[in-house]
Image 1 (cartoon, rainbow, N blue to C red):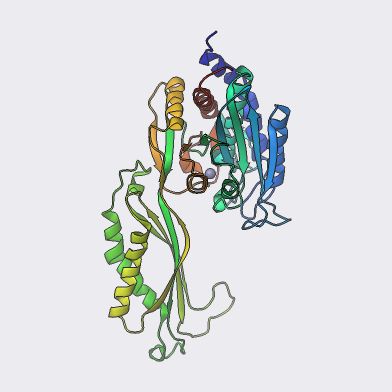
Image 2: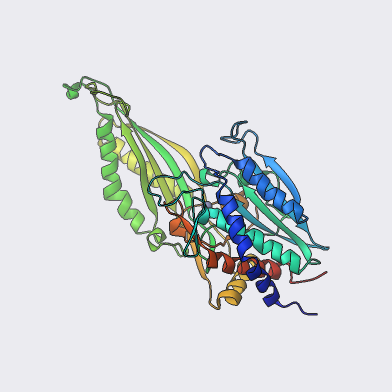
Length: 427
Ligand SMILES: [Zn+2]
């Protein structure tokens, strides 16, 4: 008998209340990162639920990863369900950490209250709503097609908000995101229910230090002001680098539009005496000034070129400006990632969106990075996208929420995609 996808969609409609309560339970575990609170509680909650439904559960602590300690263990959970016959594996990966609460909330950020069809709270949108959605989608798929050929995996991983080194990167280094274990990966980050996120731009973070010579502040001519040297750097950025970056446009479908150009953010700047002391400062010419830059680059650019542009500005300044001394140090780098539009996971989710929402998906690329970088680079698995409910712009904001109807629709899209990827086959 031919399986009817509508049966699977009805099963998801029937699980609406369960989807809501699962999201609420997850939001009520305050997994704030940093420092990485309650990871173990959240991982166990997911593992215990899925174990009851026939999944094999593994807890992997990223021992020795940045931030891991007995007080704040980086606990990850990986749940695997094996079908009746062998076949490909579809993996849904969600990060379990949320960012700090911040000010400006009208609701208790960890109560997961419902108002007007929305669940409010820190992590509802980014991304416990997406995690709950993928769990419900996979459970419905398994219940409706118990003899399917292939495997389904769900992971809840640590530290995405701080780079993913205690989460997906750690697991990818140990083969959890590579063939033959896994074939297709969907990351339910909040990109909106009708958008497929193919990847992200590249990142280069660097620290720039200019140095000078200390002197009494009443006789600055006896010293050499490191902040003025940095001022010259900022001038050169304004007059040369920023105009140059605005000329660079990508063919990647990056959203929002402003991120289709290369960008640079001056993340922080400090020179002279430390901040935060009480009373009056001492009169000193600053002998050091530090800037952190956050450069986001396009798939058409090369990381070495990106660095060379900044170096050139500094080298030119050194030849123009007496006593201009600097140090430039790399802090973090990620190359751009973009999954092909004809990749199987993209096509499966595209088909799901057409079936559920009766419209064509929008293909997008994220302005910032997420855990796909580790799956792509370390796991060497290129059939990976982000797809999930939630409005991207609400992530990390106060009064963050996820719309319940959007979660139900996205669960249908996910179930349809996993059904399509596993050949829709019953063993
Ligand atoms: Zn996220």
